[in-house]
Image (cartoon, rainbow, N blue to C red; front, side, top):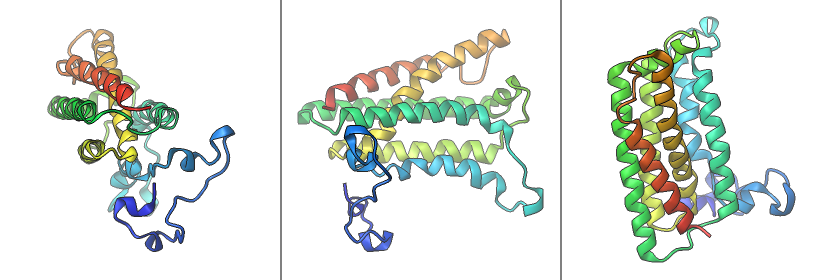
Length: 223
């Protein structure tokens, strides 16, 4: 995978060879990025929003740690590690054209389910209720909306990339499949713990089913 795969000239990024720079050796794979041949930096955009959005326009001397984001960062960080491992270990798209089309269709369903889930969470105060479970202050609404919209945009682009057999599309889609299943499990547990409705509960089963189907389709379309 070259830098120009994203439409960015290699010279712009300072890579005269047009390939991603090696970041060290790991076992038989050699360089991790060379083995994956996937630039994972586009999928880091939502995580950068966690840092940038709450601080935008805030005086430097008033910036403080944001413990309210730690639960989400820890869970999603673990999901990202698993998604990256699957991208590395399973390789690129190796299925027939029909199988790829079916996988894209399932990806679109999973993205739509996640969009509906985000809408439920937004309208019922998930960004306030989840931090409260851990005794933390509410999450910034701007951060919550920006983070979710950024991921939805990346997933839409990834479905387009999967249709064109781009390996770079697999990391965000593996992430979506795993995170969707986790969502389907965590929301009922949070509701049971609270003894009442918890934001996101209604759509969480749909998200979980769509995520499980997406994971199964990705497994069939990768080597």
